[in-house]
Image (tube, rainbow, N blue to C red; front, side, top):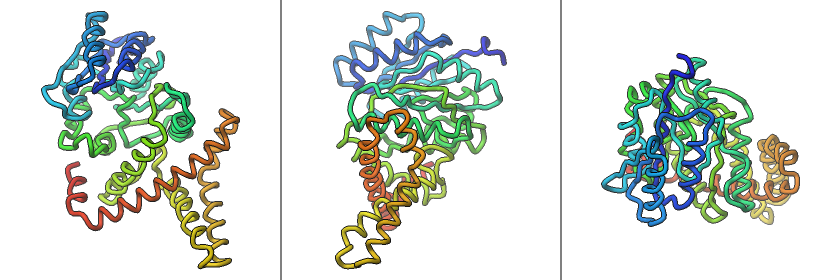
Amino acid sequence: MNEKSHQVSVIVPVFNAGTALQDCVKAIVASDFKPHEVILVDDCSTDSKTIFLLDSLQKEFSRLVKVVKLKKNSGPGVARNSGAAVANGDLLFFCDADTRLDKKALGIFVKTIDTGVDAVCGVYSPNPLNPGFTEGYKAAFDHYNFSKRGVVPYNTFSAYCAGVSAQAYRQVGGFNESLTAKMEYENEEFGRRLSEHYKMVINPEIVTEHHFPGFAALTKTYFYRVALWVGLFLSGKGFDDAGDSTSGTGFATLAALGALVLALLVPCLGVFGSLTSTLLIVIWLVGYLGFFSYVSNAFPSRLAIYIALNYYFSVVIGMGAIWGLFRYATSAQFRRQFKRG
C-alpha cells in the first residue's frame, strides 16, 4: 500500500494528564505525516485542568481531534479499546498523554508498516521532558536498551509509542479488558498475543519524549512491575525479545543483589564471601557495560551518578523478582491473574 493511501488514527488514553496533554496533542498535530484523526479517550479524569484542555483542544482542532468520554474509570486497556472502536483509520497509533511525539515518528511508522510488518513499537528519547537525575537515568537507560539492536522483532506492544494495522488489532481482540490498571502488564499480554499471529518489530527511529517518575516513585514502580514480569515469565510468556527485561540483563541484575547480600555477610563468610561478592559485582558491571559506555559518550558528566543509580535499581529489581517468585509460589490469586491472558 502506498504511504499516501494510509490513514492513521492516533489514540491517546487520558487520565488527569494536566498540562502535559496540550504538549502531547500539539506534537501529534505538528507531525510531518498528518494523522487522519486524534482520538482522546477521557478515562473519567477528575483534574479540572485536564477536563478544560480536553474541551479546548477539541475546539481548537475541531476537524482532527475527537474526545471519547468513558462512563467510569477503567484503565488504559479499556481506554485504548474504546478509542480503537471509533477509529476510522486503517492504521492505529497509540501514545500516552504525558509524551511528546517526534514530528517524524508517524511517517517512519507508516514506512515501516509498508515493509511488510503489522505492528511497530517506538522508543523513548534519551532526554526526558522533566528534569532530574533519576528521570534522566531512566530515559537514557530505556533509550539505550530499546535502541541498541536496531529494527528487530519484538513481543511487547509498547503502547506509549506504538502502532498496528487496524485489521491485526481487531483480529486479536485488542487489549484484554479483564486486566485492571493495577495489574500493569496489558502491553506485555497484548504484545505476546499479537506477535503469535502477526509480525511486530521495534524501530528506534520512532521516538517520543516522556515524563518519567522521580526516585521514590520509580523505586516503587520497578519493584512492583518486576514482580508482575516474574509472574508472566513463570506463566510461560517468557522474557522480552529486546529491551531491558531480557535474560541477559536479568542475570546481571540478580548479580547486583547477590553481591550486596554477600557483602553484608562477609564477617560470617570470610574470604570466600568477599571473593564471591567481588565476582558478582564484575558480572553486574559486565552485564551493563554497554549502557555505561553509552552514557560515557552521551552524558559523560553523569556517568558516576548513573552507575550508582543502576546499581541501586538493580538491587530493587532483584528484590522485586524474589517477591514475585514468593507470590507466585504462595498465592493462587496471584497465579490466576496471569491465566487471563
